[in-house]
Image (cartoon, rainbow, N blue to C red; front, side, top):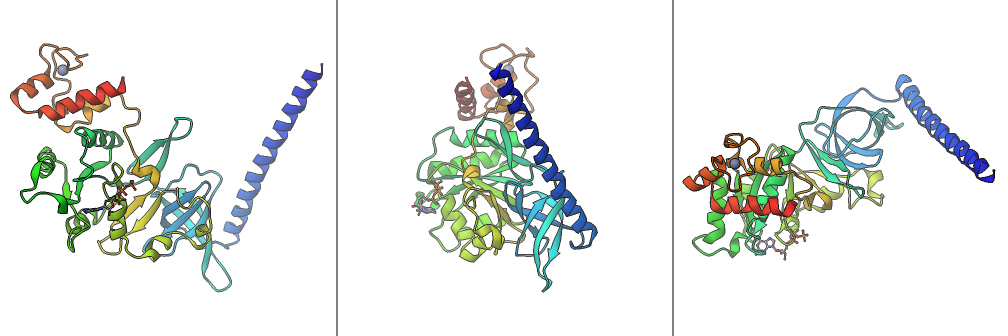
Length: 342
Ligand SMILES: Nc1nc2c(ncn2[C@@H]2O[C@H](COP(=O)(O)OP(=O)(O)OP(=O)(O)O)[C@@H](O)[C@H]2O)c(=O)[nH]1
Ligand SMILES: [Zn+2]
């Protein structure tokens, strides 16, 4: 008896809370609607999300430096750093844009996802053109680490490129790591060699960043922070990437942020601790195989349709390996990645 009563009370309370929430959301949206109709907001204009904090966003107008704190209309969801949006700014008495409202999201060319606390994939950044996989002379890369990053990058559909950092520590002839870099170049990947220890050590990197929105990923200690420090030398550039209101926020160190580089032409960088740790996630066998670009033309050409490329006769991959068209180390990497999934 008591139990049923409690349940009814609980149910009623939940319904009441939900009704209140819904009405608050529509009220907010109505208020927006009123303001929009009353012309308090300026005209619609394109912009890009440079940081996101739940339903609050920092949006930068095209060609403008100072981002504006915006909220989204209730019908919008899941906007992330890097998203292209349509927004409207509201001016204060002096004519400065003090806040804004995002009214629409543009098409995404790509989206980077990460598992959240409940292992659900959630978008963390959008419209990234390239994933720069950083490795270094020191710490020496684990043999198949680069391949793991490449497979993970390929699965996102975002183009990967390799950055070999700390080349000041290489032997005169470039050594094994330079040879490794050239092997990836021969596969078709863009590669760059860098050092933060020399004056022109980042020239090739600047060229690679130009015209693109990039992210850096890679193992701890390879020099990602050092590279970004050099690319964004001015403290102002980093702080200025947030709106005045957001700078006071508590989530400012964890959210993904979009930076515009001062030196390279139209070069942008999205960075966050979560993105730097970007890993293999949950890929299946198919995705791993497709993550090896030299396998792609061969997949589907094995004698057996369900070939697992282990010791099956007529396996197109094993034959290519035999011919020397697939490098044995890459094939070994492929196997090791598969084993690590199981
Ligand atoms: N010799 C040499 N050392 C470098 C170079 N770039 C970075 N370092 C050093 O490498 C160490 C690690 O650099 P970080 O920039 O902290 O590396 P990270 O990848 O950001 O590491 P996490 O923050 O742990 O992910 C630091 O002591 C840097 O000074 C380089 O080009 N040459
Ligand atoms: Zn096969």
